[in-house]
Every structure is written in C-alpha cells, then in structure tokens.
Length: 560
Image (cartoon, rainbow, N blue to C red; front, side, top):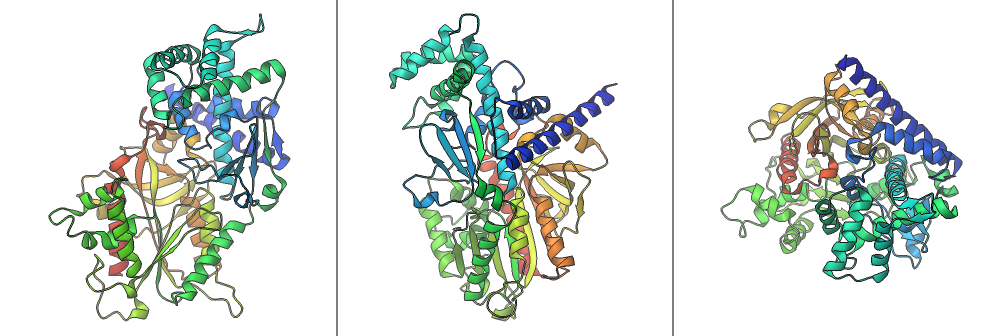
C-alpha cells in the first residue's frame, strides 16, 4: 500500500515540475504576468503541490525560514521592496549610473531602477530564468502567508503585531530592547519561536543594514497588503530583447571566440588541450601551491595548505601563488561576455624547472606539452551553450581552425542520495529529469581511483535536474530505488555530454576518442532532513574532495 502511495506521490511531483516549466515557458513567451493573477496562481499551486525539500514548510501556515535565507542569497538585495521585476538581456546597464547588485550565491547583475522596480540581467540561458521565477514564486507564497496572518478582512484593519512591526521599521535605528520587542511581534506573525527568529535576524544582519530581516518581513507583508486592500498588483516582465535573444548562444559565442583568439595569440590552438570545468583556484593551487608555499608550510601535508588558501584571511598566500603561476605560463581571461565564466589557461611548456608539483616526461618536446584550460562553472543549460561554442572550429579570416582537444573533465558539486556532505560520486551515465533521454559514456575516472582517502565513493547514474530547488523526497526516492541506479543529482551533466557527443561524433570538430572525466562531490543530501542546500554551505568540508578530484584529473593528464 505504501509503495503504491509513494509511487503516486512521485508521479504527482513529476507532474508538478512539468506544469511549472510549461507555465514558465508560456509566461516568458507572453512577456509578463502578475503573481497574484491566474498565471501566478498556477505557479504557486504547482510549487505547493511539489513541496520541494529546499523550501521546507512552504505548504504550512508558518513561515519557512531556511528556505527564505536560501532564496535571499540568490536574489538581489532589496527585491522584496519592488512591485515591478523586469528580466532583461544585457542591454547596456553597466554603462549607466546604476550600480550592479550581485547576489552572494548567484553571478548575475541586477539593477535597482527606482523604488519600485528591479531589473535582473539574464545572460546564462533558460536555467537562469527558471531559477529566478521559482525563487520569486516562493517569496510570493511567503508574502501571502504574512498578509493572511496580519490582515483582518472583517474590519479592514491589521493586527497589533503588524502595527508594532511597522512602528519599529519607522524608527530606523533600534535599541536592543526595541529590537527584541519587534522580533517577538515578528515571531507571532510568522508562527515561529522567538529563538528561531533571533537566529535568522543574526544571519541576515549586515553592518550597513542591521535590521535587514525585520525590513524584509515588513516589505513582503506590505506589498501583499497593498495588493489585497488597494489593488496595487505586483508584476514580472520579460523584455522584448531578452525574448528575441534567448536560445541563440549570443553570450556563449562571444565567450568562446575570446578564448580561441587568446589561444591563437599565444600559439596554443594546435597543442594538446585539456579542458577542465572547475573553480578558479583548485587547478592553479594543485599545480603550484605546495612548492610555492614550501617555506610557509615546511612540515605539513597538502590538505592543510589548501585549507589555508581557502580561508579569506590568507589573501597574501593566495596572491603569492597567483603571482608565481602568472610567471610560469598561466593566462587569465576575466569574463566580459556576460556568461560570468572566467578562464585560466596553463601553458605547461612555460612552467619553470621545479615549479610544477607534477612530473612531466623530460623527453616531451614543448609543442607536445599539455595546455590546461580551466573554465569556471556553467549554470544548467548554459553548459551546453558554452561547450558547444567552444568545441566549434574558429572561423577567422582564413580556413576554419580546429582545436586539438584531448580531454574534457567536469568537476562539480551535486546532491548525493546515499551519504553526506563531501562524499564522492563518479557517474557512468547522465539522464535528463522528466524525459527518458540518457547519455552513457566511458568515464576515465572510476571509484577505485578515490578509495583509501576516507570518503565514501559511489559509482552509477547521475540525474541532471531542471532545477535543484524543485526536488522533493518522493521524486528522489523514485530515482534512488528504481533501476535507473541514480546516485546523485546536478544541473549540468546532460548538457555537457550532449555538446561533447555532438562535437566528437556528429560534427567531427574534435577527435572521436576524446577522454571524458566526470566527478562530483556532495554539497548536500536532499533525502535527509536538515542536510539540504538550505542548511548552509560546505565550509572546509569541501576542500578535501575538491582537491582530491583535481589531483586525480591532473595525474591522468600528465600521465597520458
């Protein structure tokens, strides 16, 4: 009986995700919608039916606090105050007087146009739009919860708790006593305990805005009340230029051409190129840090060095490694294309003697020495756009020039379905959520490569999801317990592999026998309550798996 019930719930959840994405695409094509209107209600009802793990108590009367923090870290500061939200293409705001607002956990430029309007630049494809609309829908649900708690429809008035919160916001700077009184009233509004509210207030407070949490709750409630009492509807728009440009790889092509022009300029296009999708520190540190920082860390292992480099306190150490890397063949390409994907190129023929921490064959001539190309993480469908454009031949003035790509390695964070934060997943195939599309491949990395390091290692299928914030336990249990043999979920694998296969097997722009490596480390376990992405970051837990994967990728490159 339970099995039937669970299966049905998983199917309902899958249906809800499909409805969310169909509705989002329809609204994008339409050009606008009102969150309180019929279209907005369709998004809200689908999200409430889905009840994703990351949004916790979204379907309950009480407010969801961890989900709120998670969403606010991915949306621009001040968005809760805006009635009008406009999703735009890169339309030149950077050349205006407006200051870009960049959310701490999402690389996107946002601009506060006036008191009522926030513009958000979309340069990373549809996944970016889905991500924003999902988070906004969560905010509108929480906003409506506040309104229903504080608005007394019979008397067309508000509760005492709301009046006291409004008075506190009006004061501006609060004393400790005034703040605690305001937090007690806020706790009553949100249906949460005082101690929970105090903790969230602490997490969201900044030096410039110590009462940020109180203001967020006030503005979420205020705009919902104005909709209810005055008819001042909130609205989300998609500009015509965004709708015209989306899907045409404009930013990806611009990014790829800049990269290829740099490779041509330095005479690297025909050299063996090894592409690694990773962060902007682990490859550089793995190549140089142990030798560059030998004086600072004479009797220690490499993990302690990497942990020190990951600390914000050790800026001087990081600068020392970067300076040495730049003198020994590292070329940095900061992004100006709008993709928000920076690049590092390591010319191993220019690395000085006894500088690199890996051994290369001395018999290898310079024109055969590897070029290691590191690109920052892509976001969802953007992975296809960037790799697809990168692997195309460069069309300059003469004949098309083909890249000599020898290997492509993808390292990333993912949700694990059996294990905990920091554990490893080595995929043998990617499947695309909501479809039967599957991409098996021969992974040059295997579970045995990572045994004996104190981390749990799983090998199997990874599912590429439409959005990590849309998963619930019912869907994930289905993936985990079914014959798909799913070990984890992420957002880019299918898109990377689709681009690699089309370039190597159909377009023939790169060699057909290209070496492919995928390895992920767990950022969360969405099947465990309290271990979702909303529970916080990895901290130093992510250092060991990050550098272990990087080390295994580099070992294979230098031994190939």
